Length: 433
Ligand SMILES: O=C([O-])C(=O)C[C@H](O)[C@@H](O)C(=O)[O-]
Ligand SMILES: [Mg+2]
Image (cartoon, rainbow, N blue to C red; front, side, top):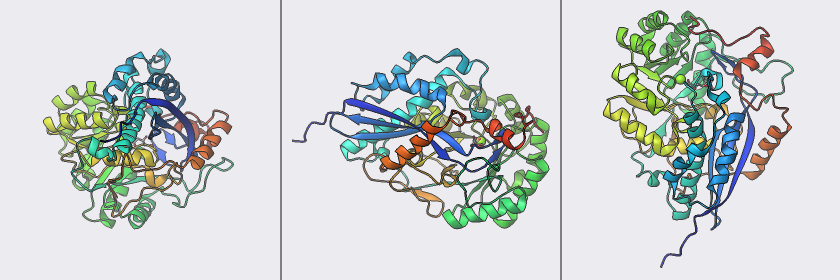
C-alpha cells in the first residue's frame, strides 16, 4: 500500500531579492544594476518544498503577502482553487489607474494581471511540490512533454560596457554593443557560449536606420539564422511599414513595432511580415480584437503575467484555434522560471519559434546548479518537480542585498537608471520615431 502523503500547505516563505543585471538598453532607458525578484517557497505537512519565482517590485510584494497567508491549510493539489482565491486579494486603485507596468514594456496593467503575476509563482511552487511528492516531473503533471529539449533564442541588447561610473554594480564580461559591429560581436559570443541559432535584437533604442543596419549585419554574419527585431512599440505605423519593407524579408518576425492592436493590425495589413507581440495581447481579454483583426501572427506568452503554466497551455490552445503561432517572452528571470518555462514549453504543440530568455544575462542565481543551454536549447528535466534545488545561502545573500538597499532599487525603473547617466532623460513619448 502506498503511504498517504499530507500535501497540506503549512508554511509559505516569500523572499524578495536583488539580482545583478547588466546595463541593457531599451526604449525606456537602461536596466538598473540590480533588479528585484521574488522567490516563493511552499512547504507541505510532509516536508515537501516547492519553489516559484516572479516579479519582486513593491506592488507585487504587497499582493503576495496577503495571498500567501490564505494558502496555509490548503493543499498543493488544489491548483484551481488558487485562482478562485485571487479575487479576494485587493489591488490598490493607484496601482492600476493610468498605470503601466515596468517601463511600459509588458502591455496593459490591470488588477487581474497583477494578481495573476503573483498567482503564477504559487502555481509553479504547488506543481513543483506536487511533482516532488509524486516523483513526477512538472511536465508530466501538464500532460507530458512532447519534446526533449526546448530551443531558446539569443536575446541581443544594445548595451553599455558598464553601468555609469560610481554606481555600485557587478562587472559583466559582455562589453559594449552600440552599433552593428557590436551587436554582431555580442551575437557571436551568444552563439559560442550557448549555441543559440536564433537571434532577437531589442530595438527602439536608436533611430530605425541604425537598427535596420544592425539587422542587416546580423543577416550577413549568420546567414539562414532566424532573426527578430523588437522596438517595444516605439515606431509609428509609417515607420513600422518602412522598416518592414527594408528588412522584413530577412526577419522571422517583427515584434511589437507599433503600440496597440489597431496600429499592429494596420502594419500587418500593409506588410507581409509576421508580427509577434508581448504588448498588445497580454491578457485573455485582449485576444478577440487582436485575432479578429489579424493584428498578430505570433503571441509571446509569459507564464508570469498570463497566470502560470496551465494558463499558458490554455492560451496556446486559443492561439491554435485561430491559427496564430505561440512562443515565449522573457524579462529578467532566474533558473526557477527558466525551468518552469522549459517544462511548459515542452508540452505545447506547434511551438515553431525559439523562446526568449534573459537567463544568459543573469550571472547570479538562487539554485545550487545553473541550468545550461546546449546548442541553444535546454534539456527538459525528468527529475521530480521542476528538477531544481534552491541554494539557501545564495538566496540569503541576495535577500541581504535587498534588505540593505535604501529602496532605490526595489522597484525596477529603467528611466530612473538612465537619468544617472542622462539627467534630463524621460521615457520617450510614443511613437518615438
Ligand atoms: O520582449 C520584450 O518586449 C521584453 O522582453 C521586454 C523587456 O522588458 C525587455 O525589453 C527588457 O527587460 O528590457
Ligand atoms: Mg517584446
